[in-house]
Length: 372
Image 1 (spheres, rainbow, N blue to C red):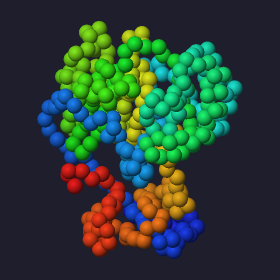
Image 2: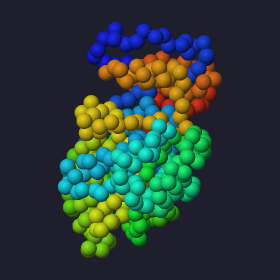
Image 3: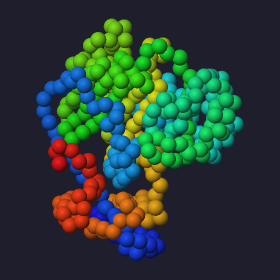
Image 4: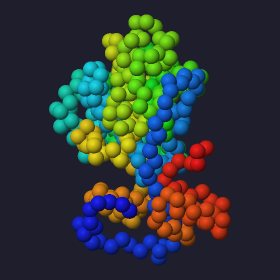
């Protein structure tokens, strides 16, 4: 662990002895940075698909990583608040969050539009394909929304091999529309990948050949010329409006330290962009400089992930210190204990475990790819 403050301020409660349970633990190693690169945006006919959004397997230990998924409610809140500040675009987004503690009478008083508009309700639980799974209800009144939530709140569902109860919903106005667009922005080591399609919606993966993708190197601005390949085939009457929206969304992405942003779909309402479905990830290591911009942000656990007592305790410590305290149980029935170490030593430990015991995969807190 690293930090500047002494440990005397930490609670004195003792952590249960993990050695007695013969559990296997890994202390993730963080700290990868983006390397600057030069050059113009590169146009690609295909790009990173929505399916590369962290899988349920990687998410099961992903809460220790810097990329933290946030709820759709918060993604839209941040986009609406800061798109106007950064790009002068005033999104007419309305949304409300519903949980076990929600009083619908009080909520409708706070959000009067709930009683006067047709509504959409869906789980806000960090998993996708809600429409294909029959978990999205359209064109309801508030009483029907309340009944929909009542029937599903706390009910366990299985998504991507993970099971968990539904605890949070998002309620929004029902927006009739004809055209659906797709937009995603994803950061990586050398820059950002921006993808756009005129054929968004639940069939985006089946129509990925129609997605246009550019790569924007780090420190290169999203200019009109950079954005042009994405919108070149759009009708002239919407090209400028959508181009401005893409560039404005990219400004929000960078200013608020998003690491992933996806709108699938967004549409145009009275000629103005309107995200219908949105996902987002924030770089939580940037919280120290964004706490005012993010506001009362929540970083929920990945869907289906339940913390053990040991993990919960260390997570509580992590919230109270400037140090980085991460603890993930990979296998409660394991018999290998790896020591706390930096990146280089962790690789040595992993190789030793593999050579001495089994050829197994150990998660070290970063994604394994062709770069190693």
